[in-house]
Length: 562
View 1 (cartoon, rainbow, N blue to C red):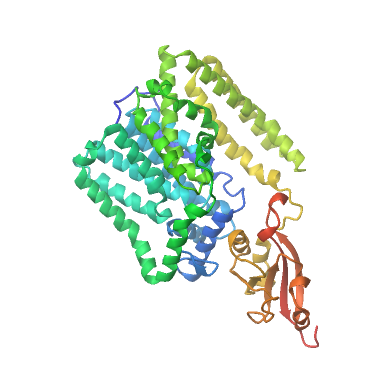
View 2: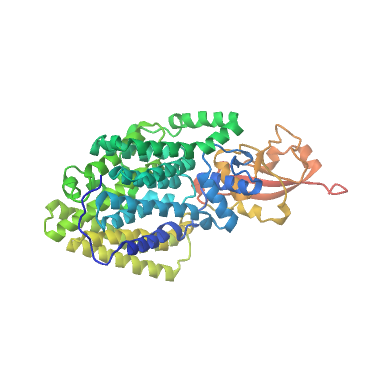
C-alpha cells in the first residue's frame, strides 16, 4: 500500500539531481579510502576463494586453500574474482569495489521503495541518504563479503513486490523481477535475507494491510515463487550433484551453526538503534509510539515501517547465534522510518505545529552532533600524536575546516529548529569522516611493534614456486595469513611426520621457535634459512595465535654439505 502523495518538497531537487547527489554520497561513504583497513577473516575467505577461481578456473565449485568451499553461494566471490582479474591482488580498495556497488544498489532500492511508500518527493532522498550513512550499511559496503550483496538484492525484490501488490493488474514484470532478485539474494548468502529482510516485511505488510493484497495477486505471486526457486536452486543443485558428500556436510554444519556458534542471550539486539550510528537518537524517537505515529502517518504507513523493524529484531533474536552485523537488514526499514520522521518534523516546524517534545529532541540531537563534529579535529590530532605519527597538516586543516563548519551548521539547526539542515549536517559528518578521517585509522590503530605483513612473502623472487606449509592448524583466523601470503598453505608438523611432504625447497611457518619443531636430522639434511617472525596483527592486543609465526625455508644442501 502506498501512502497518499505528500508535499512536493523544496523546488529544484528533482529525481535526477537526487540520484546524482546520492551517487556522490555513496562514493564518499563506500569508495574513498576503501583500502585503508586490512582484510578481515571473512574478507580473506572470499578473496582467497576468488584467487583460486582465477588460478584454477573452478567458478562453479569454489575452493579455499585447495579445499571445497561450498559454505557460501558464489555470487559475491564471482564479483570479487572479476575485480581481481581486472585490478590484480594488491589494491584492496579496488577489490572492494563490488561491495561498494552492492551498497550503492541498496541505496538506490531504498530510494525507489520510499517513493512507493510515501508518494513524496523529498522523503525518498532522505531515506536513501540515511541508509547510505547508517553505520553498518557503509561499514559492510566497504567489506567484500556476502551480507551487503544478499540484502541489496532482497531490498530490490521487496521494492518490486510492493509495487506489484499495490497494483497487481498488469504488473507481471514486477513479480518476475522480484523473483529474479530473490534468486540473486539466495546466490549471495543462501536464505539469510529471506528470513531477516523479506519475512519481516511480509509480516509487517500483513499486519498493516491484511491478506487481501495476497489473495488478489495469488497468480503473479506464484510466478515470483517459481522464478525465485529456479534462480536460487541452480547452483546448489549443481553443487549437490557434483559433490554430494561435501554438500551434505556443509548443509549439516551450516544448519547447526546458528545454534552452537556465537551464542548470545535473547536481548542481545535490544540496543539495535545504536547500529545506525549518528541516527541512533532520531531512530529511537521514531519508534516511540504514539509520539512518532502522529507525525509519520501523514507521509507513510507507520504501522508497516515500525512493524517491519520490530519483526526483524524479534526474528533475529530467536536464533542463539548473534552478531552485530546480522542487524544490517534491520537498518533498512529503520532508515526509511527515520527519514520520514525527519521529513514530518520539517513539515511540523514549517507549519508551526511542532510540540515541546519536537523542539527538545531537535535541539538535543543537533547540539549533540555539533559537539561530536567539533571534537573530531582535535581528537584526530591527539590520536595521531599519541601513536607517534606525523600529522599531515593540510589534511588536519581540511578536517578542521569541514568539521567545524558542520558543527556550526548543526548548532544553528538546533537553535533555529531546522530538521532538514540537521539531517544535512549529520550526513555531511559521516561523509567527511570517510573522506578525511578513515584514511588515518591505520596510523592510529597500528601499535604492534612486531607488525610485519605476510604480503612481503608473495613479492620475494626467491620464493617463487616454493610451496608453503604450517606446523599447526590452517583453518580459522589463519586464512588471513593464507590470503596475505598469496598462495595455498597446508599443514605439516615435522614432529609428527619428520619426512617433508614435498622435496625441498619449502617454506614452513610455526608458532614456536623453529628449533623446537625441526628435528636435528632435518637440520643436517637441509639448509634452514630463517626469515624471521611475521606478525599480521596491526594491534599488539590482537597478536599471537594464528597471525604470529616464525618463518623458515628448507633448502637442499649444496655439494660439500654447505
